[in-house]
View 1 (cartoon, one colour):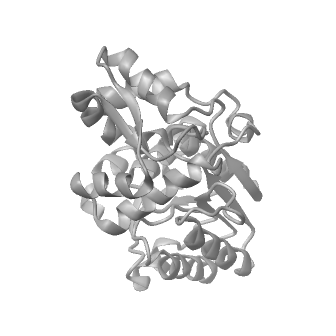
View 2 (cartoon, rainbow, N blue to C red; view 1 turned 120 degrees about the horizontal axis):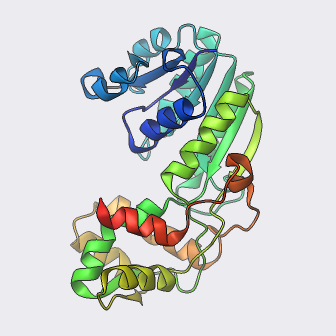
Length: 284
């Protein structure tokens, strides 16, 4: 069975390829599809097949998926363009005769009020309408989403946000990647709501950074407009700052919390503890 992973040179894609191999997949049966094959030398060295596939160039997709039995569509990062990009992938997968399609969505996409959710939900509907047996990997928040803020937090003594005391059931990319590998290897159709075992607040995250660095880091809760302004001042584009501020408000209201334990049951182990995830991020 040939398994393809899109976006395979990305943070998540590389980990999925590694998890597939770790769980027994023959590297020669894995297809890593990438926009720039020159950046995939490390994947090729593992023995996987590397093929060009650009979401914005549908003509590259048919050949990339030829002979593929199971496909993981990792959501693109071009906010506002993802639905047509993902639709092109799904259509190419169907034309190529792919027998199973998994898509990395967002936690509770069908009910989530997060600004990030509508594109994911629209893609889910495209996947469901394709007629291909499918799995929806509704990933919760990644701990790594906070990694870039740790350095400034240590420097200035404050981790900023607008999440209040909302709890975040985050997990590491490696946890989510392993779940994707399990679903691909099993061909396990269905909707998988995936989140970390130990939800935490932003204050608890700040305390963990402080404990590991010895710096006096505390969480500073800001009004959404103030948090957005801080993000823009730090150099983030306005649209992205809007989404992050919106996400924090939704975190405050509990929309990235989860206690079902579905992710840990799927991967057969507890999700990565926060302390370990923070330690890894601080070393990166």
